[in-house]
Length: 253
Image 1 (cartoon, rainbow, N blue to C red):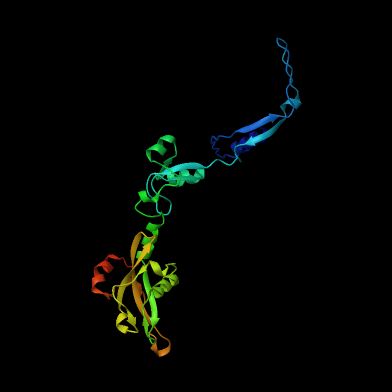
Image 2 (cartoon, one colour; image 1 turned 60 degrees about the vertical axis):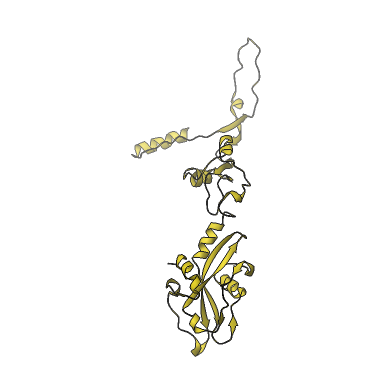
């Protein structure tokens, strides 16, 4: 108390403004020395100094607050589906989900209202998993450059596509890649300025078309000149039946 009075006095004398903010703190204490009982009808026993010495049992300021369960009221990309129960730290639940209106407290009424479950089935969502929507968006914006030899003969196969995906930072196995309607083989420089798309199946459910372009590679004098920002420039469709779908696929900015 003396320290607080000194602080207030110093602040007043120095002309500082003091803003008092109410806090909710709970300290659970226990007497070190038990208070003796007095006889019924007798005079209360006068407490001595040792009876005012306490041990701190619990300080709520340092006690970890329990996790909070919330229910998503809509599909959130990369998080979960509507009706899914999330267990979060209090500040995260409040700031990132409750305040923006993305979730509600997992009260018994809300559990019944949203038919909530911590293992909510993804069949009720438009996507097979919370990450599919993000994956489809990423792949649809890729212009996949497939580097092929300008000298040695080749036939384009799924493993070429899978390797090109890996070079672009995506792990796409060969069996989920659907190739174009006709065989592509080379070297053929007429393919250099044309594009096509392959179809990738995600979780055996969702499909996304990925724009592809073949780049003929060679060393020395055989090397083709580099085209700056080539992925932003529209190209002619290699297969006329794919032209309409390629126009729907956005080019990266």
